[in-house]
Length: 211
Image (cartoon, rainbow, N blue to C red; front, side, top):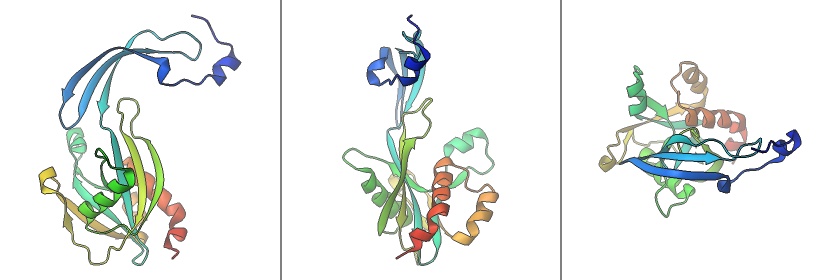
């Protein structure tokens, strides 16, 4: 292996061509797909890594939406059962989180945000603002998450939502912004997408309230 100088190592930029897949195997294919890859990649110091094995949880792209009603000065969060916290042994595996869903073939992220807001909260998006797009857990998952804040009307919306054929049982919570600090302090919002969106919202609430 040829060692790079510190200056050369600092300036190197890698891309897809700098990874070699030696073997790929589908271990499971159901609602999600699990793959096992044997691969090697270029190293910052020069040359190639030794072959390594990695499992990848293939989820695709997802979209999350923080609902905000500036008239009520309230946010909308949904509560539903999540198998991950249950498997961990969490005493309360019903999480308070963003409206969210997977991007289907032919959809753009904004379309998913509009559809999921209608399905999971029973309201229409009046204005949609992009917060960020990022990898949720890049060490072992390919999920790419698009995060939005949607201006909506939460007045008079119904409590229960969800698509029965997707086994969804969703309860909508309309939470005054003044109650958010206590909710966060109590640990009721314990998932990364929701925490990120609420921190973004806190910094921009004044401009979001503007007509």
